[in-house]
Image (cartoon, rainbow, N blue to C red; front, top):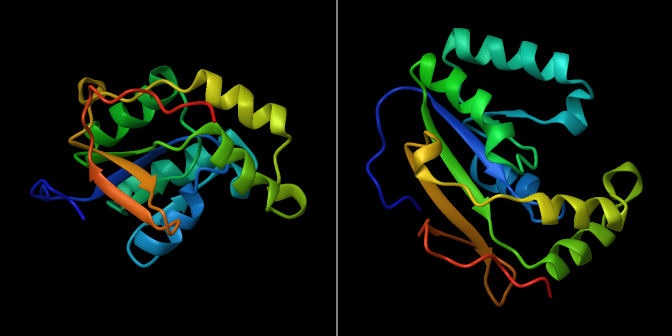
Length: 164
């Protein structure tokens, strides 16, 4: 899955993508057995998220930050804290068209379904990640024709996905 050699030490994984892009499903498929999931939908408050993050950083517990993390400004404090705690920081950019995110979101049940306007708003705010933000490694996640995840090294020159 990863094209670069893994650095020693615990790993902080930061997901970047709109609601409905498949981040939580990807977590269950790739990280469930190895990384603790930090997610605002589950924890409900930023205070709880920060407390659990602090415990992970103090104890060296690998974790996945499974939120939209739409902008570099939102990602920056998490990256800085992880690097200060000697974690390697890996980013996964969920590069799906808006239409796919909306379709996947519409299939959700109950509180898991986000209003379409919320998905669109997040999608418009998404800032492409860059290694310069402090990531040790950065990957692009997309779906193949069979709707399976494809992970590839992130190429910073890739274009932003179409809105369709």
